Length: 221
Image 1: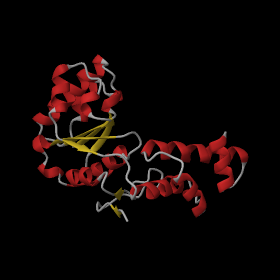
Image 2: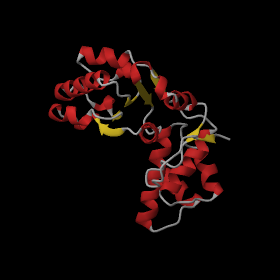
Image 3: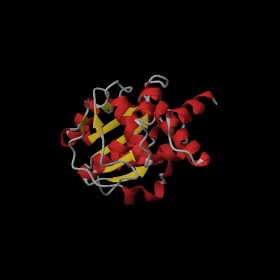
Image 4: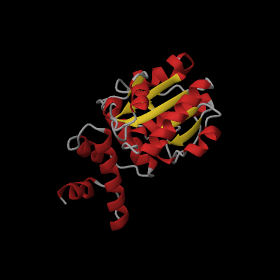
């Protein structure tokens, strides 16, 4: 059985921050984030597959480090000095897509945080070496930062993540639904997220409880 994360967690059920399960695929990432006071240069990258809980884990770290949270896609150069006053989580760096204004803002933010000796966590999907960053100085700084990487979903975590995603939507299917799904969907965070979202939508549209027969019809449609 995968264990629950050992951080002291805030209660925010809508985002599920009070629950984060540790297994082989994310254990190393969790350990590196827990050791944040010893991060090289007080910074770290957190990366992994889509829907693998990176933002979730980043918000847990922010709570522990009294850090603020910002989205890299909303950075503006004029606001950087105001943002760089606390430890910081900077999310969605992989979504910058070589936009020069955003890259320049992030580069400036990175340097100010370093100068002020404030810890910060950089979050993005996939390996940092594949993030579309055209500003070479920024790219080299990110690629030179130690990476806490979440791996692909393992068999221990698979049923727990599925149950949690259903519960986050106040859905509690019977065991035969879980058994049916476990034989038919890929072992990936994104696959589970997508099917749970679809089941929820269809169940609401058709005003039907989540049963094995309903799920089977969804797969056939």
